[in-house]
Length: 370
Image 1 (cartoon, helix red, strand yellow):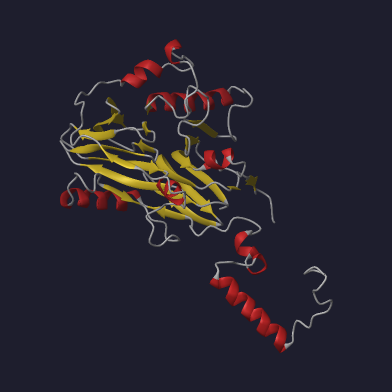
Image 2 (cartoon, one colour):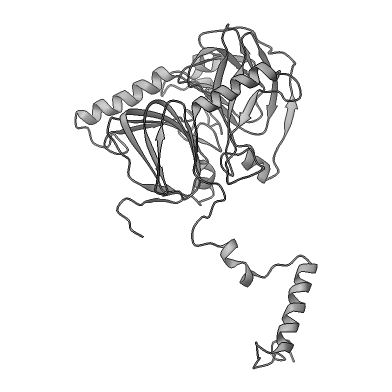
């Protein structure tokens, strides 16, 4: 007779005997590290994402003032490596993460100061809100950092920074630190104690080779997982956003994401995909009075106001936006933007990871009362 055939056909689930046997079963489950699905299904398989991270906004004036204070008190050198201050989401206490997969930080470099070279498996970028005078050296290639520029440091590329000016400079760092940590893929290696190449060229080698839109050097034909172009310049970004709005005004169809809303994605010229494998980077421009439709996505994102002002609405709560402010948008947060006199924003997200895993889901909720 099998175990199934030997099972009682009727059970009094409320009897003291049954409850005692059930309690013994749960104790034995725990002793060997087993967890029954019937007691944990809602936690393991919720009807929709239930992020621990919460929608949050950091004011640029607060961030910059604290970063400047750290410049007076904290040296840059081996050990700490960078004067970078992570933005910790209040819903993730103990972790310096903006969302469970994204690390955002303000990095501050004093005049005539160098940050030593190192490399790590985490991918990184720098977005410059204001200022210039710093060069980041990526695998020996000096790359100028200027207002509105996006600078890449793909995973396992040596990189250091040097400020050759007489003024300090701060910028937004974005990395996939928490994602890499969650899957135990973190590696780190020190490089030279000083930046190897002290040159300050107007254009880096990667820009000279890959800087022509749609033009691929024949010797470098072939897909690369991450962009070989280390700098995406504001002059090109601004021109592309301006052109989208001009074409829309001329009646060209399919120009804008939504009326009054131009957007560009920073892409890998060898594939047409995202510039970095684990993070999507974009720039958005909203004309005066434009409001985006309410929507939500299973990706999480971080936004920084580049110019202009307006409001952001997250899960029904409206918050004002000003120059440099940084916003964390957790997964499945209902989100919309409103521009006052025009609004430019930089954003990065973890969307490429979930696209590759066929997990990304987006829903427009405008007019949806569900």
